[in-house]
Length: 183
Image 1 (cartoon, rainbow, N blue to C red):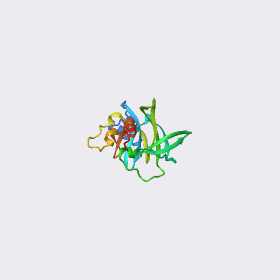
Image 2 (image 1 turned 135 degrees about the vertical axis):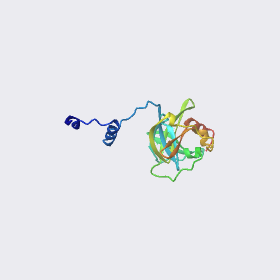
Image 3 (image 1 turned 90 degrees about the vertical axis):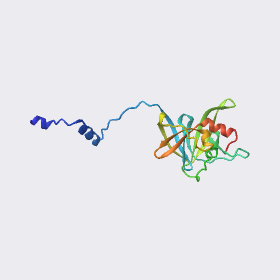
Image 4 (image 1 turned 60 degrees about the horizontal axis):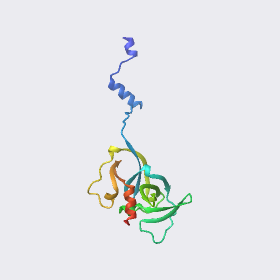
């Protein structure tokens, strides 16, 4: 009997609870397809773009006004010597931007829509970048029919991040709206 007290044989539940207390929780690997997304805020609303379409996230810098441009075009910036347009994304989506702040950013984005034989690219001004994360594809739901235009026209899906709904945007639809004079 002495040997039994030296090597007790705990039941499986006790063993699991003991491992959990020691921080040895087993992780279950799930091979679900994911998509990398850049999540950002415009005003209080969260939006996202596919990470493959965002080449850089730049801090908000001086944007130079260009007279005679469409209202959604805030101006241009120099990115390592290249002149890049900056679109006020909120203007295209019908969402009011928050007050300018230190958290503002410019997403350098490139779509597949071509202009003069080149893929369209532009800076997109956002109020703040929230996160860059991988989201399971099956977590992205269809856009509700009740969503107001123009967001409904440019959203590809919606998913939850904490307690917030995040709209996954279609960059090519945004660029198309910009080219057609929306915003």
